[in-house]
Image (cartoon, rainbow, N blue to C red; front, side, top):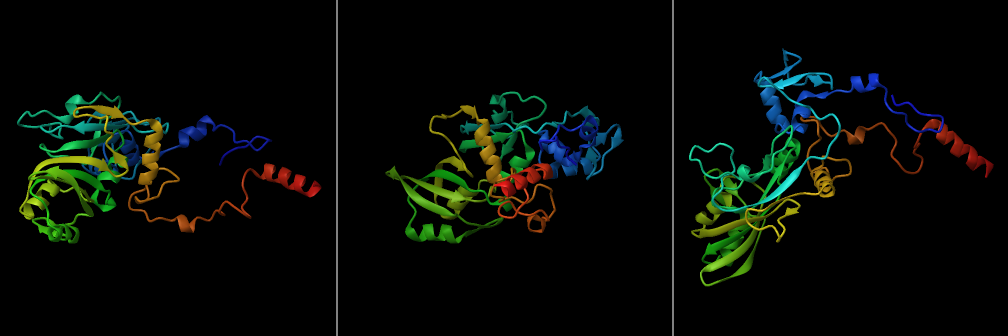
Length: 312
């Protein structure tokens, strides 16, 4: 329970209180940039994580004094809440979104700056022949909230076709087309100009299936000659970012992105609660809402305010 001064100001926590602070292991590892929370749960279940030399279990809690190892290597957990790093990159054609490629092709990770105490995690993927916006982050939860299919985050593409779509074909795309792995549906599609047989369109989808846009157009009997991702969720690729260029997102914009994903208080809560597999219990919160009749502040300060109101 927090302690207060005689003026009603909260006092700093004692060392004992700081020592008692703990977090679920999978959440602490995800915050440290090791991967998404579900990835960490699987890592723990596979017996690849230890706490103070003992095998860890999913649901274990860790403190700042605990020694955590993953695959025998010490992991430094970030106990001070930090804004994760987010990097936007204009991927050119001819780069693979993987750290390990048997064919030895250029990787998007070759161009990234080093990150201390963690690793860059991609938000979604782009195939070898597709260019455009690629987002990297140091936070596994953020990457998961933006790229997992269940959150249905919009991806917008500029696509150049050899040939034009008829109005009937555009309606069919909006209604959905049957692919090998299920029905694929376009949220919106509009013409964006072009010359001769090369016609540009802007389309929006909410899934990240492998080569989805190319397969959709192939199903319609059209060939994609160029494909560029221009937006992912609320993040649009700035025109100043040329192919092969990258820039780090300012801290304020990262905070807004976290709110948009529902990972910070005040966001739109499009994602599920931060604690995985737990239902939203906001409606069952026993605390009174802020506003008329709500008791806000320390009891001593409320007594002073009440005394002043009676005297006036």
